[in-house]
Image (cartoon, rainbow, N blue to C red; front, side, top):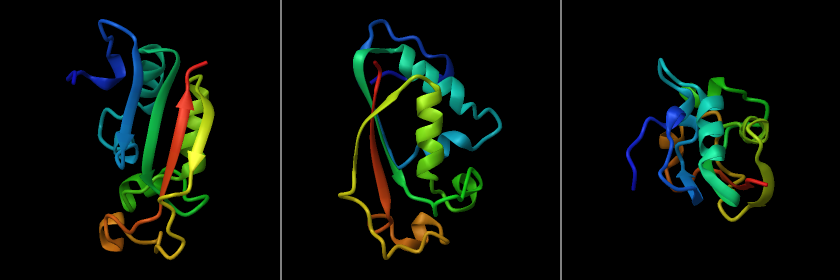
Length: 126
């Protein structure tokens, strides 16, 4: 475990894996949020072939970035767009945590933290 400023991190050695669970949306919020810098820093600190695993609460399709603070959810299409802009390639995605019955117009805490609809992305550094 390394404690760093995400956007400017420089690890002593390249990593095989970065993992973020149910908080990618949080990186968008706050006065110094710079998701492009964070994604690029993760990319630059991964070995070629390294994985950035992103799992988060799903926002309604087309919800955009407003969902990150309003509902504490992430628009999956926006996440994919941001991650590919940083250089990642989508390697795989899973539907194990999808819950079509989830009310995406509610905060993930109102839906029940473990019953919210969630997406899983395995992004790879080429």
